[in-house]
Amino acid sequence: MTPSPATPTRTSRLALLLGDPCGIGPEIVARVLAEEPEPDRTTPGYDGVNIIVIGEPWILDWGAQCAGLSLELPHYNSPEDLPPSPPGPVLLTGPAFPQAEHTPGRVSPAAGRYVLQTLDYAADLARAGLVDGITYASLNKKAMHAAGSRHEDELRYFAERLGDSGYVGEVNTMDGLWTSRVTSHIPLRAVYEHIAVDAILPAIRLIHNTIRRSGLPAPRLAVAGLNPHAGEGGLFGSEEIDVIRPAVEAAQEEDIAASGPYPPDTVFLRASRGEFDGVVTMYHDQGQIAMKLLGFERGVTVHGGLSTPITTPAHGTAFDIVGRGVASPQALKQALKLCAQMLTPGASNPPVQRSI
Image (tube, one colour):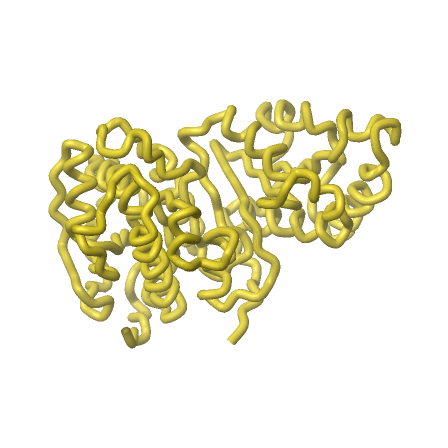
């Protein structure tokens, strides 16, 4: 594919990927696309943004059948053929995936290979300026690794493909509450050795910039402690005194509205009551358990630090309910809305380091 430059006068384009074809992704994409437009809108809640669905037509049709729906989208085979301002969502054929290799509800290296090819395709469109943001339905890391991915997650995969060389990290959000984490997909016993000022400060900057990119100019951030009761003045650990507080103070010197460290067992209670817009946690489950309890079906993951806004539902591929027509589209809908919001001209867009 050799994409041509984007047409300057076109409306913003949001690429919507079907996710792992053996999971609930195609089904929930179909549900979102089938929703009735909201008043005075051509698409369901995404003003001024064109939805470009990327994937095999038969996969989307299969997802629609699982959901008991019938979809008819304008269909294009080349990005150069896309109209500058279509009246609604359109379908752009992506990489091929043979129906004979489709095994719903099972981890599949073939599906993982198809997913990687689709991520490549969407990232290349973004680099060429042919799409402005990406939302993808849930993927399966085991399938992707079986297909040859050497990255720990999709975020790092996208960073390499987009050529983004700066600090990146997952940021999660639900109902206006955001969270980021200093460490992510590592063993719990390894967390302590990664807690340092030069690890915490970038995580604070990341969530600050990501929230600003969504349109909130001065987010209020709480930083969680590492130990029970935030160390209880050093009684249960000194990381709060020696490392976390200095990182918070360094962020404050950069005019970031950060405070803490706060006891991890109460900070999300305070945030959920509106005291903070975001919480920086020290490790994966410290924030993920709280956020998923607050609203698992509405959670969204943002790939923070990338040059292209990328969002995805916070839930997985749900192989156990594939094809039953019961999968909820709410998290995907929220992911689409957030990505569209990040494409709004009024949103603040801090610079991102990109390698050429």
